[in-house]
Length: 153
Ligand SMILES: [Cu+2]
Image: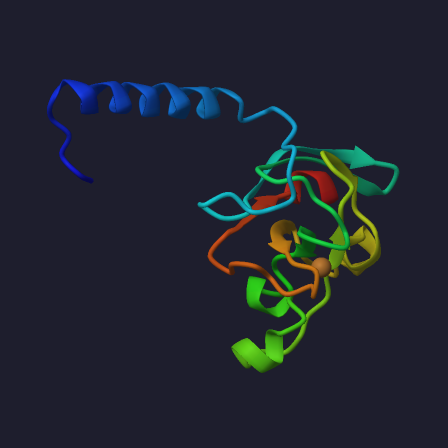
């Protein structure tokens, strides 16, 4: 970080602090744009509950998911790792392509297709990460998993 001194620079620093505080305070607000922010497209679990044999997830993302652009990949984390739930699993990461469900159902999503309870096998962990228009995981370092063991047993 650059050291700031002098009275005119001080005003800039104050503005930056105010802007940061404003963005930190609006974490739960609906994101308006699909593009990933500078720190990447991030998705977090807010809650998970039972829903008629499936699971209802409430998620929080810092981008507006859109199936034809940046969206959400949901998968059973005990069965596949984040690099496997990507179209380029084999070509970029050299791992076997796994099974996931791509979605832009947000902020509430019910497990289905590749993320259905029927595809769970013995898994007890659900994961989410952002995929792009090619269904490639955007950043394999940015994913979140949540144990649902108490909801599936
Ligand atoms: Cu996708």
